[in-house]
Image (cartoon, rainbow, N blue to C red; front, side, top):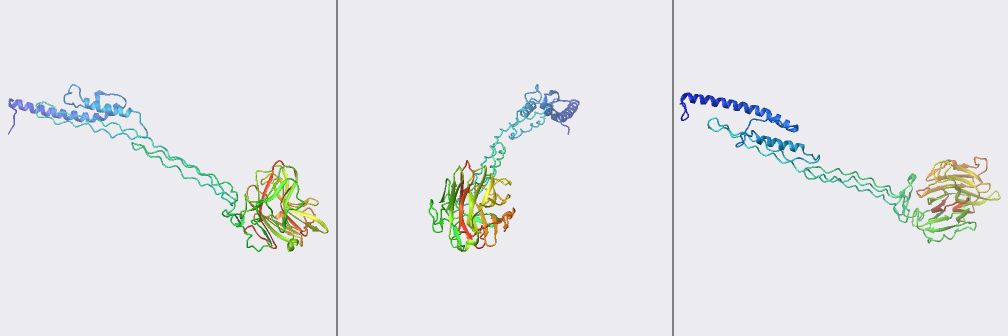
Length: 439
């Protein structure tokens, strides 16, 4: 049954229906076109306003101002895009989409009420940049007492990661911590843990003279500081110049005592501790001692001796020596290097590739054989081949190894210097067999 509106004739009703269909088609077309142009509107708002391309929707009560609600939404979005952005901050959640148009009411030619546009979401608050991690620098470890080398300081790990700021911003990366500085050379004080040397020998800990079977082993442990050992040990009358020889406790290779020898700046001087009554060691022996040189020290040319043996050779007195000549500490042939020297005639042989050092304990071994006229020398457990000589020196002079009446340990220098020479000597051992640095 055909429905007719009140007050409308049949033909009028048909006309009304035709008009409504046309309106619907037009409205649909406009909606489609409006939706197609909506993207153009948002794009245009990034750089300019293009009112012509606005979608054809109306807001109730604002028919003379088409689509003002959409314009407002678009302007808000454009402004939000033009705001200076904090690169670390996350923006707020996007605004809701524009409301869909309401369906048309049944009144003649009355258009549907447009849905009210939802206000765009506000921009998120910029996050606060997280602070970077802090850096902690490792402290170089100092040498422990009785140890020749200080323990190296361990470097700290990298800085912690900074805490994230608000707005989901990641904190700044922590800065890598610097490695700790290397440990300083230890003082080698009493009671320190052993430290390995070349060839497996070690320093620190208790003296190894106690209980040993060596013919002689002097560790200075039973002598008071400031004094010198007694019995077969004495200060020779041949000592001269400005200097001192006495037991000290500031450094020790092992145990808690050593012998400290100081020769002051100035002219030549000789300060030894002497051992007599050698018995079977007079015709030949092996020796071993540890010693240390305080630096800085003399940098000009110098000849200094550490060990001196004296006695008759072919009816004449001879003094033979293990010592050093050269200019300054280093590894060049002109730097301090070990020598064998015969005092009478001032001749001998050199090892210009074997060099003492400063502020470190060193191990010196030797062999003097008067019966077979042979000498050998070892430095830090390694033999110095240039100082292994049988019978005759390279210059044709005989070795002249005497039958020993005394052995002297200390320091002698033969040049004028502007700096002091300070040595420490510890664990002097003598025997008929090689002793080694590890014993």
